[in-house]
Amino acid sequence: MKINILTFQFAKNYGAILQAHALSSYIKNEEKCDCEIIQYYPKGSDASWRLYRRGKNFRVLLRNIYVFFNIKYKKEFKEKNVVMRNAIKKLLPLTIKEYTQDSIRKEPPFADAYICGSDQVWNFVKCFDDSTYFFDFTENMENVRRIGYAPSIADPWPESRWGEFQRYLSNMDFISVREKSDISIVEKLSGKHVTHVVDPVFLKSKEYWSNLAEKPTINEPYIFCYFLGTNDLAVELVKKVKKLTGYQIVHLNLNARDRFNSEYDLRAVSPQQFIGFIKNATYVCTNSFHCSAFSIIFRKNYCVAPKSFANARMESLQEMFGLDQRLFQHDMIEKLDLNKLRVDYSKADELFAPFVKGSKEFLKNALYGEKN
Image 1: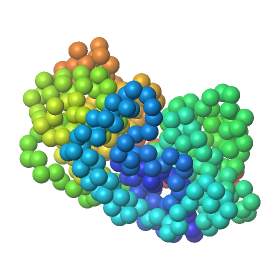
Image 2: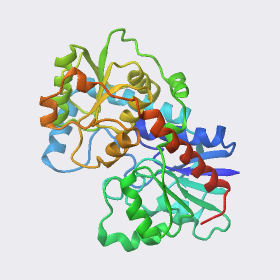
Image 3: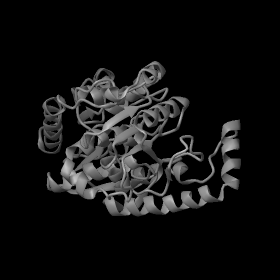
Image 4: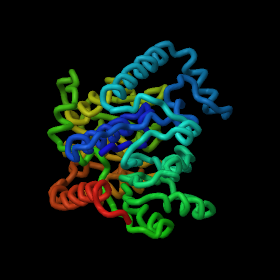
């Protein structure tokens, strides 16, 4: 059986690469299918690879000027591009041919089943407003399966466009979502049963990820910090954790500046090293879904400084594992102590096992069962 996955395979993002690797690896090794990831590039997909950001607002202009004069940052940025492109080639089974929105409609890649997901492939607000992620290019195909596995909406679909999404969803044969909060709207618009499933990284075992991880050369306890945009709340949280523990900060920095004054300020890090830094950390501070996910996989003490948007996925994650509150606002950070830094995983295995089992059953049924 030939399976084609449609996801954000192009992203210079650890979570995007690792979830795509996990799903393709699971389908190939556990379901024994021929699996490829479509090299699809929506408009604007090269944004994270560009040294200078597009836009004319003051913050973008100021950032670009800072980058222009920062030789060290420019060097590390280019090094990371090389590291991440090599990781994509190594970890992802990509189609040989590359596709755009026009070319995939004219000459779509053949498959018995198409799977979109995971990641925020249905986030039409802050990611890509692109109906390709609902397989509109397969509308003239017969006897193919169209499957949504753990796509994330993250930012709610505008009500003014519900009719449009209703048409998109009517094209899908099997639908699941990653966030529990997305079930009601997707069921309402699709008129179909929607299954709550785990992110693909949870389909693979802790031992699998442990073997893939590269151990860091840091031989002392550390706080691993990874933020998709560093706001004041993140700075406050990291400062408090460092004060409570006295540990050094290992910062995987996505920004031009290091607002944490880290002992280790890193940029050119591979996905394998990313996993290794989490696995070997004493504490983790983040606002990233996948950094939180791997923290849970390795049973780490982690804290989240929530962003101003798209936090439903974090809440869904801690609910699935029966964890105490891991999203810390200003008032909680003020009261933070060493005891609150510790994560209670006592309910995790019992609660999460049914989700993993159900997710695997969903995939098997979507690939081999009767269509809805």
